[in-house]
Length: 212
Image (cartoon, rainbow, N blue to C red; front, side, top):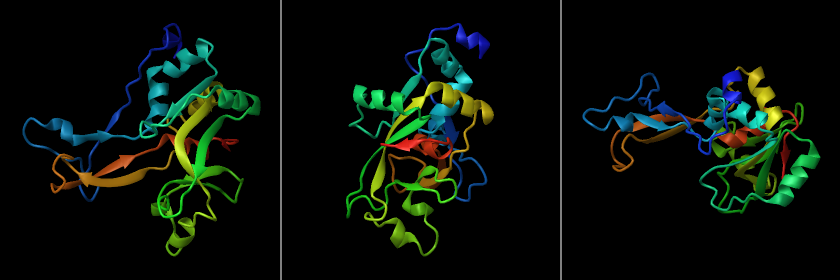
């Protein structure tokens, strides 16, 4: 990190990939021929934190005087860098904040929604697939759990750097499993197992994170 601090923060940051796994998750997929790229998958937006840490970019940002980061998933086409939200976030003193929106009944039952953990009252996200047996109906109840994650995050750079240092550069984000065709251009080909993390889950591993 000391060497990285002397450099100007880059305009682009390349995240890492993860190998696609066989159906039982025991071995990486092997593709014959010239399409070796099909052996790899997007590791999810949660990899941004490890990439910021291991590349030294996080330290460059901190050394250059940047105190706040706005991070949004590419799937959120409506993400906006709103100065009013930045003003609120800076005044809040929170280490992180997640923009949420009302869930719509009939459309958003399976989307990740915001909940509070009973022990410690920490904010976290939960998807339908994470519901315990017998609780699927309660999880899908848009009246009980009213807000979904938009994927837009506000982060306090020094707080993020401290938390990453505590975790050795790897935040304990929950890992999500996804089964998809090895070749997305051919939906009926062999399916693989992809392991992903989501950036929005950072609110569940940093004390004091707020919903907005």
